[in-house]
Image (cartoon, rainbow, N blue to C red; front, side):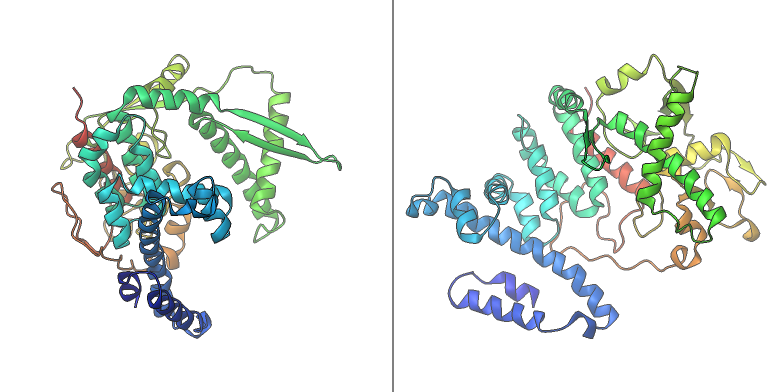
Length: 427
């Protein structure tokens, strides 16, 4: 049904046929669908949305090229589109801009038409195809599109960010400077005395705030849990607000003016991590964003040995110290097959082969799992679901992209960095 809908030309009877098929689908109540059908429909409708977006973009681009929007005296294509389609002016501008951008990105347009990527990927790739990088992008577009079709979105985003840093270091530094200049905080007092905060922080400052707020909020959660079995006395948002007040109270009461020292990890001995410059959560940084921290930072060196050698082994049941840190650096976030995005610093280190089954506490037998996927058997042991296959063959750079399941998070990030280096090797 989906292929039939997207394969026809829109207009006249074809438009009526498209509406008829949609009416038939809308007439089926979701509650009447069995679980497997409902799940498949939810996923496939996302694919259909992408394909229709490609269809719409191609027609908007041609409609704009022919200046058909000008027949009623409209001043621009987005103005006519907003008026007749009932779009917000900003949404109409985005439609026209995206349609024109896809005209300059043939591989991206093809992937969107196949349903292999989404509009969010198009926006990401359009940003890469700008600011003087157009020539490099034309050369490397197929590889970047492949990253978007084979990786989770956040990993593809990181791969594209690394590509942009490698393709145009000066431009990336300028972008980082603009990002830092956007920082600001506004406080608005409401009539009842409540305070509304809005802040924009650069990535480094954002991590400092986020990690401390999370630490204090988790302390409050444990306090609530001790007093209430389900910790329902406060919502997570309320605990975060209380944690912010706690931060202010601690700052006002402390007599120690020294700021906590940031920790910078230098990774040695593993080609996967070459040219890495990012926060623990994966945000890619430029060297200039790290340099100001060096004077006050603690530096740790993480040495990765050959993959067939055990760095350390122990009969202890828990991962601690340098061993835990090495696994956190390697995996970066929860490695559960569901694609959990919880960063490693907020996770447990789990034995791949359990201790009762003969597993040892070693680098090779450890993995990062969040508390939910580590401690709840129903989540931990849920079977992986087969990922949707792509509709068309994709270019390959020697990596297997035909598997039914996506690589684990560590492998995805490694693949992102390998592709970034392959696209623009260092001089």
